[in-house]
Length: 117
Image 1: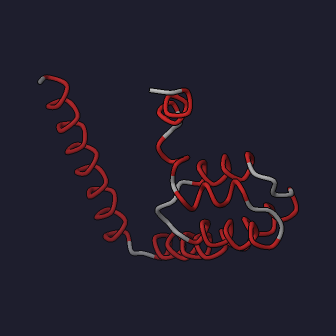
Image 2: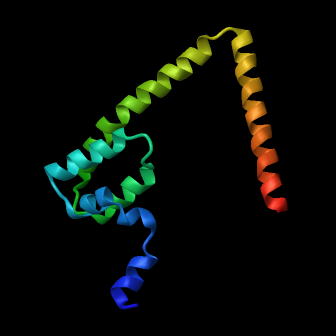
């Protein structure tokens, strides 16, 4: 195993993603669009985008504007969801709390079952 292979095996897996690698090499307008599109995808962790942008040649202004625009849809959905929960009847709120408690209990049971093995 030569040095380049060894270096590549030490890198976190997400840094080898083609979009993250492209973002690291981009700057200017292409970097703006890549950050914006990555922010719109709900399954891409924000920390990964932040790290890739920090390691790239992207300016702070481009990163800030693209991030601000890209986070707006998620922010609006979250605000709408919270508003609907606050408007819900007492029975609806009790149902949501019970549902969360059941989910937390099932997670706790599953986690403890896996540690016993």
